[in-house]
Length: 437
Image (cartoon, rainbow, N blue to C red; front, top):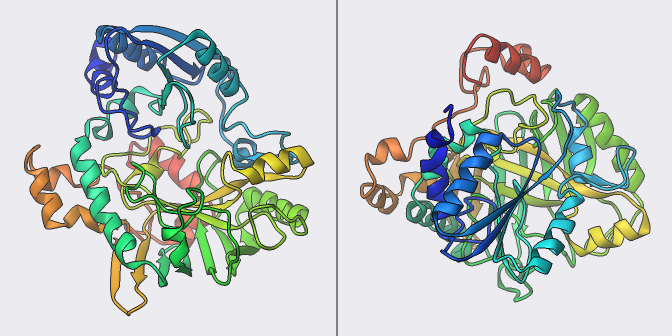
């Protein structure tokens, strides 16, 4: 992919695709005569940006561009996750995600009467008087992947089929999440988590594209369970770290073991916030389990050079069957507004589960497995397979384009000797040898 023309088919697919008000898959639904503002930072591949500008103008819309200067790219370190997602900490006053310029761009878009603002690589879209969608395709390899052109109708349907067991059977049921890297925790799905009309409490009857929630978001009136361990070596934006174990007790982080510098930073924040009572949590402490976010598109990949600060692992988390566990405050929540004003730490941190199994046991004892060793089970549902036939070979279309290469789990080797102590070194050596990671 060396020219704008090479990328135009992918950009056109997104620009004319249905608007679902989510950063993924970010169809824009652009119509002739509309005014569009595209806002990116300097980490974006300019060829990608130019392809979107041309596709928007081809659709008959006027398009302007805003570029925020991020400075030069650099190698990621193990504390970048804190810099991106945490505020009022030793690593920064406010988180970089969403970055400070977001609010300025939003105000400008409203003042100038734009119909659509395109900006952001993840997280929720905002309630604004104009439409807003995301632009998560920061590099040409991500834009030109099968995830971009995966059929919207099929993606939506396989998510609905994956979500049905929860929506119909989760009230009062038990959820267990395991992973061969050491994760094993359980929690109860209370009926009000699904049925409460408060949108901050209730699950949506139709899941978010690419970010299907397996745990209710805060606020919580009580948290009586949520116990076990979340373990792994990857987060969204930091350098991969030695295996971390995050111990949960009654829905809250009790201790953090291992994790190298990432673990050290997390332990520091755990102590700093242990006695702070946040408005949306029932007991003191910052790090509460709230995000068990499930990727749903089998064609997302891990980009090359993921050690770069501009790349990271934020993209791979959208691949079907991968879970990212989030612990802390929810982005743009009341607790974050309160904490920012009180000058106390806020934000949340992640651990990726690359080969999870997620199983619901209903209140009446039936078992429903939504993910099986990293495979979203709805991809094998006969109705999903039947729909996939409309678009091509269902076996090829519903196959994951990328599977993490972890020794002792997905490829030959010893997890402890080859990977767990230095996953970044393992990934870098594989990249240098031209091998899949």
